[in-house]
Length: 307
Image: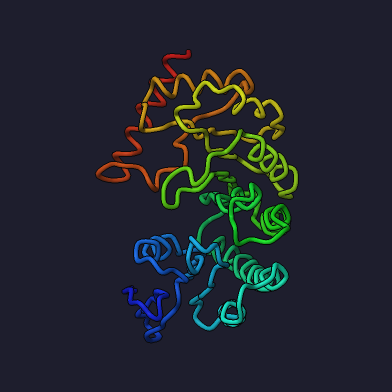
């Protein structure tokens, strides 16, 4: 699949060459840099989902476009996108307008994910598979830092947790990644403390309808390594035997910084693992293996230091 970007009336569209022919969709972006980031991060569940605000500075709702090879999802979200385009052309949409469009899109997407889970577990032995739900946008939604989302942020997180996770076979390992987002850089906003992530983790583990094997929770900026106020909500974490990984490994300060954050977190949580603040995807390094080697070296040094 080849992708190129071309401007169209101020909004950047994407021309994608597929075996079924050429398709054009809107990224909803006016900046080539933003559009490229949207395309780069858009591959979800085997389809292309492009969702971004018309112009971030104007805080307008996202334009949704999808390629799904003729599935019901493609029709539903294309209709939703057309509806939203029409609303935008008529002026500023109301909260009810946005809610109706989001609900139509979310229902179709959940249906697709449910079908993809069946296909995925049929192709890969469940005992060899691990699935992690990425909850960066849900965290931002609940924290009310997304200007274009309406009321109902908690339900947009809680509903899919209770509806989709129980459909995953018990032999498949399942985890949740709770993060502050990395677009265009990490973190997308400065969290006050761990309170929201702890509340989300507690809910996910209690309402997934099956074992949750791990939760990964992003940590603070390095300047807050010893900020007890940030880490204190960890004392309210109630996830039973679920493994907890705190994203407190930061490339900027290496082992010394990790030791400071580990010591502060240990005041409120006695048993946890450590990991990169937001996974490996956006780390520096010549390749992914180099990043993982650096990560392993720092964690190994921490283990030796605290043992």
